Amino acid sequence: MTQQDLPGLDLARLRDYLDEHSPGLVGGPLTGEVVQGGRSNLTYIVGDGTSRWVVRRPPLGHVLPTAHDMAREHRVISALADTPVPVPRTVTLCQDADVLGAPFYVMEFVPGTPYRAASELEALGPERTKAIAESLMDTLVDLHAVDPSAVGLGDFGRPEGFLERQVGRWKKQLDASRSRDLPGIDDLHDQLARAIPASGPAAVVHGDYRLDNVLVDETDRITAVLDWEMSTLGDPLTDLALLVAYAERGKVNLEIVSNVSTAPGYPGTDKMIARYAARSGRDVSALDWYVGFAFFKLAVILEGIYYRFSQGKTVGAGFDQIGAAVVPLVTLGLDTLKD
Image (tube, rainbow, N blue to C red; front, side, top):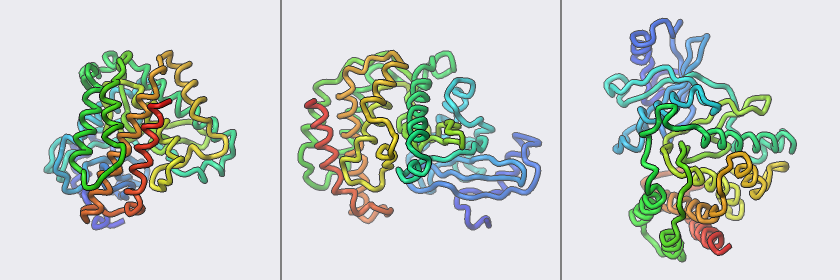
């Protein structure tokens, strides 16, 4: 791949930086490829013909550095390195924007597959699918069992008032993208705001935990949890609830969201929740509130994409259909709170 094909990554400047800060790491000329782009952080695989690494940097032209904090992402991955949570080993963090035009970090390349579609799991068969789904839940339990202070993350977030701030934050996001009537969405917010549960012990929260944000190897072992952009210290049941909401999203025709939970062998929602509760020892009796909030959050995210798409400010496969999924998500949220 030529340098022109790597927007945001100058291989020569990266090589110079690595030679200075990690001497001996790179043994030959660097090549690279983009593996992810768009609204999220940019991800590249680079190699010297013998070894491979992953480089992460903010999107091109981003204007909100706090939303793409490389140091924060590097910190949490580094902190979890010697815990039961599988994460790539970090190599270096560069906060000098003069090197690549933005802060970036480098971590080891970890082999594995991020399963995004039910058809990919169907090819493995129901037994392997069940094992992968259970490993996904067990890894979440392992993450939430990490003592933040013991790994140097005691100040990684503000657990006190976490849920209140989350509800307020996503209401502000909604108000910033209001362009049409969305029946029920204010009622859903108001019900959530009136009944915020008391949080249990705080934990490191991933923020977007799902099967396509982990890598699975050929033995069905989870080799790495990726995409820690939204991680913080907070209420761990928000991670569990989002995983449940993604599974239940099959009730809404939403092609841009992974449908892995519909694959034969994937355990039902009740079994997954019971597995988490049994292995974590955490009280999940108020989980309906968390799932209702997860649907609210997903609805706000999709409405934001719809709003930007309708304004001609973003493009993407399936974005023209996103708007139709927002109200059904709101309805799922309201129905969850009625249960």
